[in-house]
Amino acid sequence: MSEETDKGVRKNAKHKASMEKQKSKVDARIDEADIERGVAILLTGNGKGKSSSAFGMVMRALGYGHKVGVVQFIKGQQLSGEEIYLREQCPGVDLYQMGTGFTWNTQDRSGDIAAAEKTWAVAKPMLDDDSYDLVVLDELTYMLAYKYLPEDDVVAALANRPVQQSVVVTGRGGGSALQEIMDTVSEIKEVKHAFKAGIKARQGVDY
Image 1 (cartoon, helix red, strand yellow):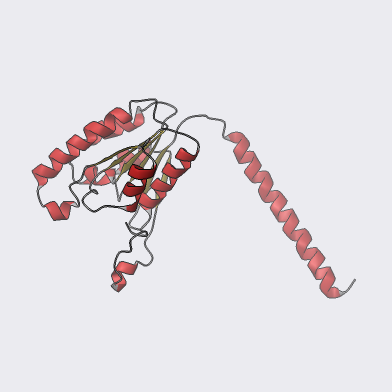
Image 2 (tube, rainbow, N blue to C red):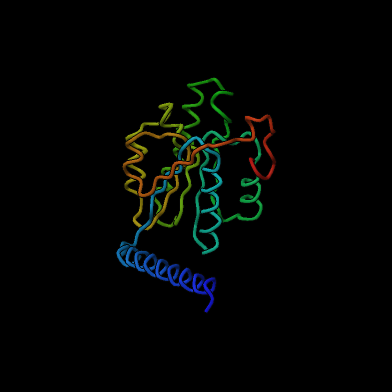
């Protein structure tokens, strides 16, 4: 056996041993996770992709025939690809949008609060309905940050939803009380963003 071949054999053996060790750890963790219930996920941070990730989970749930509810806070004035797709291709998804657009455009606090309360009146019953397998509350965190909705009410509704129901909340921030009750909190960090380089938002990518 040549020296080069011997190095290759030893390298492959080392890799195999490393992967076997890793597999053992992963298998052990899977065996330990024996609780069967829905999960609460918060997608936060200043990076792009929070809503996109949430809608990816919508597609995943629909693939299994699950019942899905989607409530979008803030967004709604500009037509989006996900709205078009859900309304035209997924009539079974219950989609509601606040429809006021961004708060810095409306510049009307009392009007925004009224719209937020109306939208929450749609979202809250979903969180109390065990027929929903997945509920997505897109940009909900801003309603808490701007104090458009009572934090205690929102947190309680999320915490007391049906056991098998999963919920995804998106948006920057949200506060420690919200984070505390979530099972998974992922922070998406912005490293670069095309918009800052003067590149326009792209249909099919950004909206």
